[in-house]
Image (tube, rainbow, N blue to C red; front, side):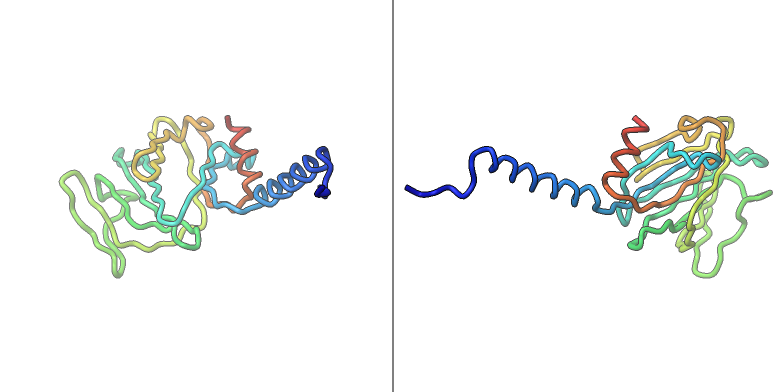
Length: 175
C-alpha cells in the first residue's frame, strides 16, 4: 500500500494556499493605465489599460476661433505621451500657423494638419466644458465626450503605473 503524503483535507488547504500566493503575485503585477482624474480632488473618472503604440486623440472647439482642433498622441515604448500630429480648421488667433524643424505643415480640404511631430507631454490638464465639445478618441474608435465623465471641470490626463489590484479597484469604483 502506497502512503499518501497529504490527507485529503490538507491537500485542499495546500492547493488553496498555492492559489492564494499566485493570486497575490498576479495582483501585484504592474500595468500602465491611461488615467483621467478630476484635477481638484485627484479622483479618477476614467481608467483604461494601455499599450505602446496606442493612439489617443483629444478634440475640442477652440474658444476664440470656434473651430475644431484635434491633438493626436501616441503611447511610446516607455509609456509616455507623444504628440504626433495636430489638426485644426483655421490658422488664426491661438492656433498653429507653422511647423517646427522636421515637422510637416499641410493644407487639407477642410483645414490644416501638422504631422511628424515628436513632442513629449508628461501630462495634460484640460478644462472641459460641454459647450466646447471636449472629446477623447482611443485608437480611433472609442469616442468619449469628456464632460460626460465629471461635468464641466479641470481634468488631469496622464499615464500611471499601477498594480492589477489597484486597477481592478479603480474600475470597480467607476462602475
